[in-house]
Length: 60
Image (tube, rainbow, N blue to C red; front, side, top):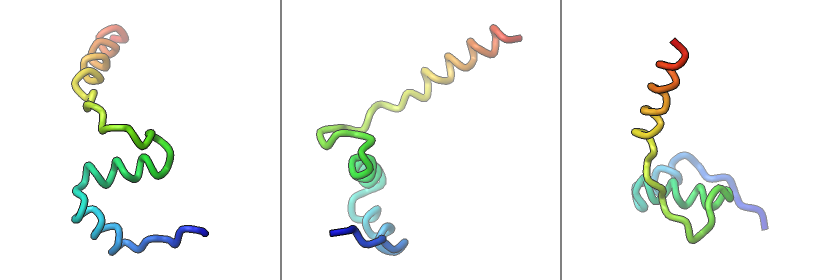
């Protein structure tokens, strides 16, 4: 059985019902990016910024 395409309205309803983070997690699991036992990982943004600053210093 193939999955029917979801309308934009249905997607908005899902986000409202689940919350943004949970919706993203479910979609990532559905598309195979994370295992079903997965959890939302910590945002590594701060670490990435530090690494980027160090690389910019090295290159200049």
